[in-house]
Image 1: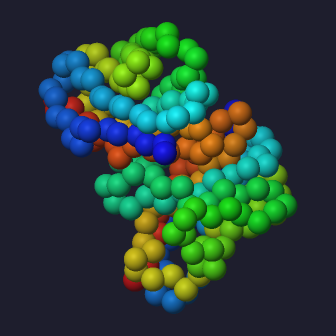
Image 2: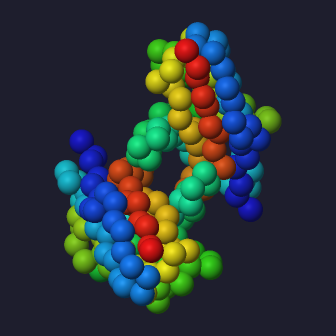
Length: 111
Length: 112
């Protein structure tokens, strides 16, 4: 069975703090893709990153970084120096034969 | 590139009426489109997979007679919520597939 777990329901931080959003996935497939999406209050999903199962290289994009570890089936997302505009719900997703979303983590960044 | 639109962005309808939501891929052709539903403060759940020219494939628990999906062209898929009830009130999001899924902005449906 495919499953994505985001254990953190809500996180609150003060601006400029670093924050890590956890994602743990389950799949028996050897080929799959992992995603992170941001959903601001407007509701529109914003694509952040895609990783395939054969690429464990970590990635940094500006203030965002991702740590993919197949050994622990985790794909964690870190925002450094958080900003108020980062406030949103963040979804981790797993794509094998279909796209399965985690339950999301609501991030609130206070000034 | 890879822009997906949805229309309307929000709709209010009375219980018992039907509502049609359109999903268009504006700058690419998509043989496959997907429909998701998101209840408040919950995750996105796949409702159905829509393939151009064929019948949609519905996920378990989704009533195909209630949620009619038509994918008549490579750029347009429609979701019709028939005989809508208040419990159908939700945020409906479509995506169009080209190498990966590109999401529309969503349609907020409120049934009174």
